[in-house]
Length: 620
Ligand code: TNX
Image (tube, rainbow, N blue to C red; front, side, top):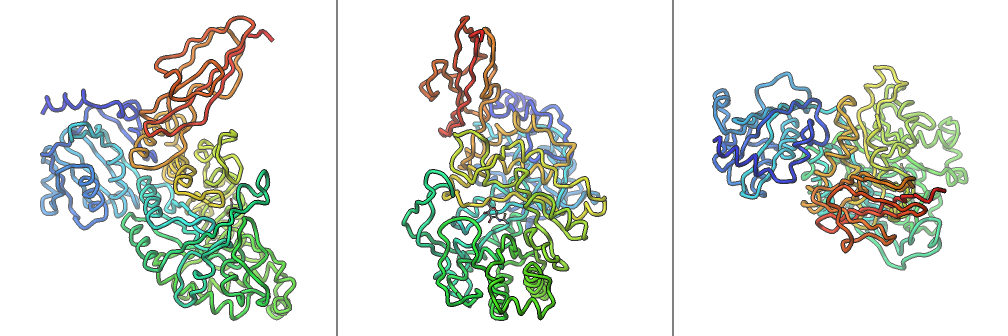
């Protein structure tokens, strides 16, 4: 055994450095507590893998992981012997029994050179398996090792959400599954599926086939940004796509296997042009000509609060509830211009008849009628923070996106809240930096560090009110994201920061450790798993001017296995340029300056932005 262990220690490949150096053992999101110990547990073909609940999703997941990664060990049901299992050597135990003190969704993982014992509560076993998998270092011989240590862990928030807009651009089921896969790897548990908007209705509704026959297709799409060089250009290409009910059920079941709840969003009363194009009688002016929107923004064609509209929407929601078994149904509620309601005699009469204050009151009436329907079916309604305007529906959960104001107000009214303020870096459609090298986006500046430093619990709330902050969510709006590669680029690595905001207690967070030690390792692994991502810029230099004549620069790549290439001749660095292997010693002659440029290129050929540093000895 000693001999094997020694072999393992020496075989630890370069890609284990983050774990070796990181007292937190390289895990994202960082666990509540990690105690690193000396040594490793070796997984060999002889290792016994035992469990006490073979049907558990975590066990199925781990068995699949073992199979996919070429391990021959099978997981043995050892329910009857778990008491004695404590004595079994070279064993990995995955248990649900044995530690009643675990917090909800919590787990405990103890790794010694003789045994690995994972103990989880409900989904906690699944999250423990995710951590375990992150710790496994596969070596080249089909063996693997796990560093020794003790981890005890549980999430800070029960709602750990990620959103995807499939209306502005459509993403197929295969991509949705890949999205769910990466969510599960990082312990996110809620997928907010933004299924309808002005630019496309993407879910089959059997009773109203025109929603997808007409509403899922737009004649063309705006090119480039709303303003700027292509402001008036369109691509002249029909665009469409939707999910059949069978596909939706397939996604919901797939997510459930990974402890992810899917929340569907059906937008109302605004962001509804696509539905109105399909069924103009949903609007206040059915005689008008409507089309599925071809550009972005906020549109004045909105649902009319008529009995016909409520009948149709209730029918739609009934089909939706049938497909989505989760507690929450999201009804949008954001950005609903009131122009059409102001012009409509019907709406003005309704305001009088119901003694509503104004059109905001009418919006509130609309949302409350929908909430009653959902509540009557045992479901809970969730909406964007505009649902506060004109009076909050009695049981609604508020998703705070226009800063934290709405969330704070809702919590003060004793309503549950999900924080997703666009101003705090949670809008994953915002640019990941200010550089002109960033691709087309909606704009903004939401670098990794900004999201990472977000704390979803506002200080102004009392301790009781703070309990209403159920969690946090990142939103991926897709006006400017037309492909899976771009969606992944915008998502990663920021989703890893989101995961840590959602899971890790503030005291265990550390951006330096996250960005320098853990991110490189995780990006390397994500690359190997076929994900696209944004390569963060080289560590050790920045876009700036330094004065002096003598420089020593130590650079570090942000992706494990990637190389840094640099130039000092003013040309754009690429793989034909100098390869950084040791600290740069640069001497700038008096009266001159040197332009140092560096880029990271990963094994798969992904490239970072170029960083440019001027080393200035001009004496000016
Ligand atoms: C605002 S967030 C919207 C979306 C856009 C997004 C772009 C929200 C409730 N509404 O319709 O896609 O900004 O960042």
